Length: 103
Image 1 (cartoon, rainbow, N blue to C red):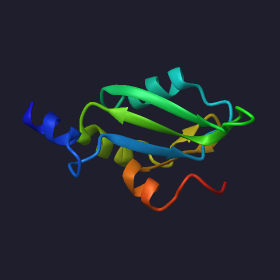
Image 2 (cartoon, helix red, strand yellow):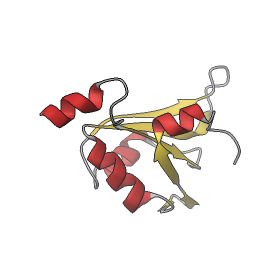
Image 3 (cartoon, helix red, strand yellow):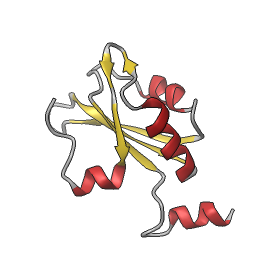
Image 4 (cartoon, rainbow, N blue to C red):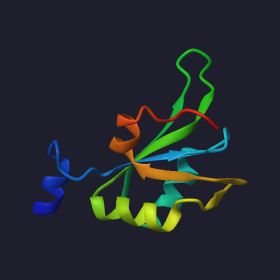
């Protein structure tokens, strides 16, 4: 319980991942099922363009603990999802670098 509390504190280990190179037909329920293999998924947010509402090819996934984040990166990075090799990283690293682009 202490570790879970630490994970939610600013500056503590994050419980979120960035998933890039998603196919545009990515489904939040399918993604939750996939990532539930490595830990408890608390939310999935597929990012869409604010104007066109078209998916942008990436999402953010929140886990209940940071160990699940590392497991997702270790086990699911570069796996094939609906014909594309997904790319996974810690969410805050991706946000600092201005990620989400290209592809």
